[in-house]
Length: 162
Image: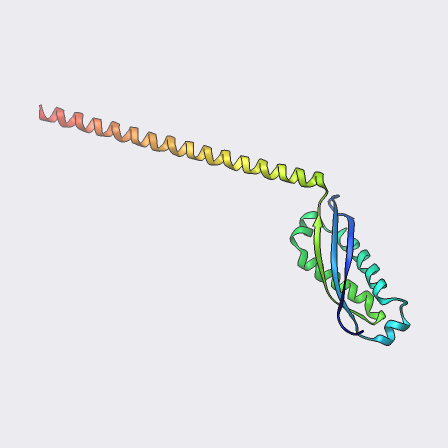
């Protein structure tokens, strides 16, 4: 079969460069471009490509930080595709595309990130309140200053009339 086929790379537990354990799965799109080589050079091109995809995913993501994995998926997928294509070319297999499907963090990491986000939201809320309080003080001070100037003007006006 020379058509493009896909397979899922099962979730891989990966330790990132910044020592965070993540679970990542992917999907690989490939096709056999040379049936003779795919029969003579490898026992099972599909299984071999699947195993190579799992190890390539672990190897590449192990060199990345969590932030890089979350923000640079497209480049990581392209890098994986390039590595896989180089590895499968001698088997008569062409890897056309690799997509990272899901990046899952451990539950305790999700909770701590949610708590951090909540803390940041609370911080910004207090900054907002503080800014409004300062604005209120500035407006009240200006109003009081305007009343003093008005009163002084009236006083001078009354003194000149006398």
